[in-house]
Length: 115
Length: 115
Image (tube, rainbow over all chains, first blue to last red; front, side, top):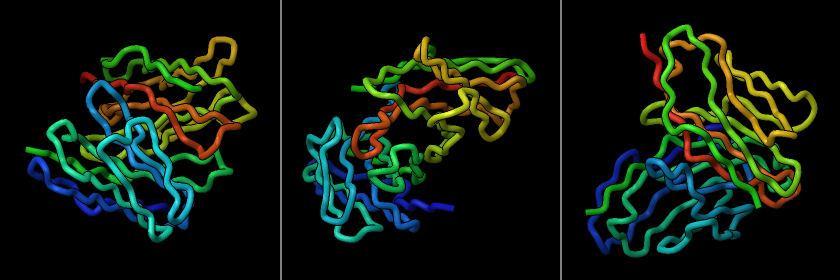
């Protein structure tokens, strides 16, 4: 079974802090994604990556950046946290760019609170 | 372009009753369609998916969904609800010819099961 592990379940940070959210997958998946989940808004794609050192903007990239130095690890960075970034963050992976019919495998999420 | 509309943000049924969660999609290319379930404090997990072939798809936990191209729908059903089915459900679409396997999610439907 694919396992996607997010390093923290809960985080509390102060406005202006730089925040790192880490995600690791153990199934050699090429694709990795970061979503944020807010009540009534479903999941919105922040950034995604098809391969090491590759990244592409999703639908709501403002205020975020990502890093993918190793295939199994995809990090989301909040350069200067703001209260409107308080949310649930979900990391996901899928097989490859060519396999559009392969489902996403999700981590358990990181609930971030910015005060 | 692709989008998903889930009709009804909250659905309540009695234990043993039929579950029907509605999903309509829009896609400029033949779609791949997914239903995911999210239990409290967890990430999303795959319930079922439609790629090609048979339009009636069976998933885990007794759920099934039917792809109706003419109605651009992919509604999720279960003949008899169980208390353990209480969760949030997300419909998602991936354009089969577009890059990356990027999925677009609906806003989610919270299912409540009354005893």
